[in-house]
Image (cartoon, rainbow, N blue to C red):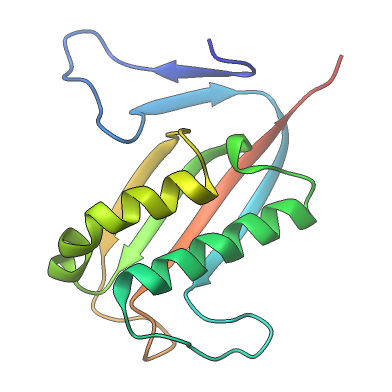
Length: 137
């Protein structure tokens, strides 16, 4: 148990790297709709670089969490939808630093899904999150 969450790791499974196999918790839930790597004030992309779009998308997730009273450490589930596996793999070293700077060393249950496209044509990825703010008793 770490704080209000319990990481779930089935016996005899290899350890997860950079994410958790599962998490259980209790509290108020904040759902963050898929965020893309554009400036939400202008609805315009400022870059076509995968890592820079990922940084903006995660900033957008963190901003929505804050508007809902949550922090990055409250994220229990994070799903990435990417359009290019090669671009994602090439950006992983940069993504690790970006993730740590915005989310910290917090590794929720996480999935990466490769999709053929996203609604906004220039979007290279979309990130959605589920956070749980612990009950205060």
